[in-house]
Image (cartoon, rainbow, N blue to C red):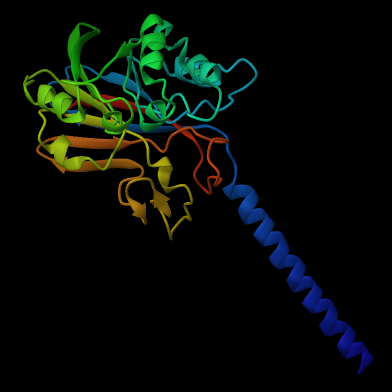
Length: 287
């Protein structure tokens, strides 16, 4: 009997150790924070030859290597035609300067366009952020539309502020609704991008003459479990089990919403799970 009990005890210990190893392995794999490149190709009416767009979202003043240039170096290696910064580049708690340094060299790579996110407004320094970025040569959009030449073909880039601007920095004549109305007045056969921090504002996007909308904000739903929670557990302004946290979504009428899971790391109190920070590289090709 003692031998049987001993064998049973060893089996129990082995099972426990195996479960511990699997659990540790699960979380080690799930908590990896290496930046990845996610690639999409999208046919767009009016595009004559491929246009490569880099999408940067939700850097939140996080640390990226000692010189803060990891993201810029990764983007440079992709040789984009246009770079889009879709908000929360600067955080309201972490270093203001570090947030700016993350994107400082982007205009040296390609024409760079920016819209503010909620955290720039929460910081109380949104106007200062916009001034600093504009001084770097970054195009700051707030209800504006600009045209950029990409290899001889025109491309329109529009952008709108985060709606929290109305709460933290209200401006007469430049509210979220004012900006939206200005964007509605633009209609063109030229391919048109829209930068907007929040993905859930789909009613607005469907009212605009745009081809592709780039957003962030949802952080990929923060906790993702392959096969169970592909869109994550929770996203701001969507709640639990969000539908719009990543990937490409057809909004109808030739409009496509592309959502970045973002690049935040230490700025969030809850760590990312099976949700590595990402840079989007989107190739727009003839439809």
